[in-house]
Image (cartoon, rainbow, N blue to C red; front, side, top):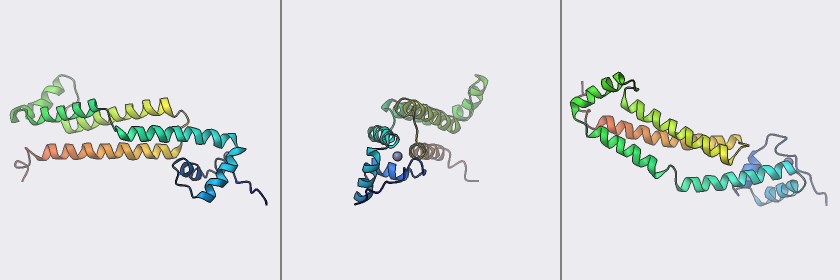
Length: 169
Ligand SMILES: [Zn+2]
């Protein structure tokens, strides 16, 4: 029997097979083939073990999406903004502008949140995945987008609730 040598997925830019292997969604035939290939391809072996670590880290990461502290701060901030008197809402942007801070609050909280997320992702990827693969970037972008969509929704709820009556022009 000819032991077919598989073309190295790293050389053919066919990283899907590697990612599928690490996420255990590769069909048994291709899995066996890839394992045979890995036996004599150190690059794929390294990549697979790095990927597995990332996958495990991502699993752990999904279990606790963002720090409890982050949510707490975000909700506290929203709460604070919802309970300020109406006149204060009008003056707050002006006052913060005078204090040299960025002014409008939904923009501010989303920007702050995305900055915080960016820090989380950069720190994490830095520590755990010095050799980032494109697919992992995609995964992160999807997660960051999801988080930002949630924030966006919060922001919309926030701006809809007390002011909606006023804005029916
Ligand atoms: Zn290889």
